[in-house]
Image (tube, helix red, strand yellow):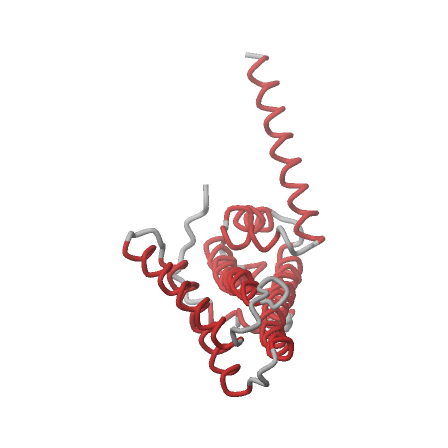
Length: 238
């Protein structure tokens, strides 16, 4: 069950969460947190987790956005559509119109949640931008236009790679700070537990190889198993 984090203590400014996640780990803050009351420690971890979750969501959104865009752009690939009489701009216009109509139907049927609605709007905007760019710069050559489309799509994949790398660094810096403050204490167990229950953190950690996360998570699972065995032994002795 997720921990209900307290936000009654104004620790955000005191501990400079953004600074920590960017890699600036101050010994004075580590010492301050290690001596702080437990509710203050919880609050600082809650702020770290909240900011990390924003990073992870950014990665997830860009990944889904890029994946959806890729599926739509495949439909205008000259290798899959042999109709050479249709310009690339026309193909893109058809794909965008079909996408827009499909999304409209899903929205009216109440089949989209808020996140999906935003993502689908973003994909439509990307398709429109690509379409308008090709209209202005088209060389009236499908292969050349397709090459330009792939270059524009590559920008989206590079944006995903950038978000992913930035989030990975932020997570590593969070571990740096928490290890310097708590070593492998119960606070680290709580931090790992929350990472294991967050939708976006779980999604991110399926792709990002964080050695310390796996190390602490393995220790946490071992501890849970040990407690279970001890409980069973105790119950048998009654």
